[in-house]
Length: 141
Image (tube, rainbow, N blue to C red; front, top):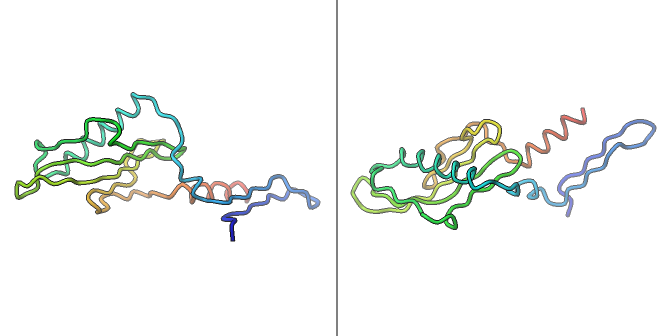
């Protein structure tokens, strides 16, 4: 009940090449790779530009100015950007909209985007745990 995944690669004569036991697949969802300030700021700037285009009154957009209100993190496959924007809606009222964008680390393209709870983009986003499982099973065939 406490093991999420178990892999053994048999070589020959009952001798195995490797053994992998994963107790928690959430390990693969961790956003743990370091990121330079330039990289952080580039993802923030690019995301602000995309979000601004989604707004009814783009000129009223106010993004948080401090980095503590931004979550920008990276793993081997993706970069996730999460924050909010305050802007006027179509009635002129100021509203806060939260967003999450996930970029591919290989192409820098948006593979998944949620704005105000609505999925706007899903260009083949695969959870990291599934990517790891696919690559491990591909190496064992």
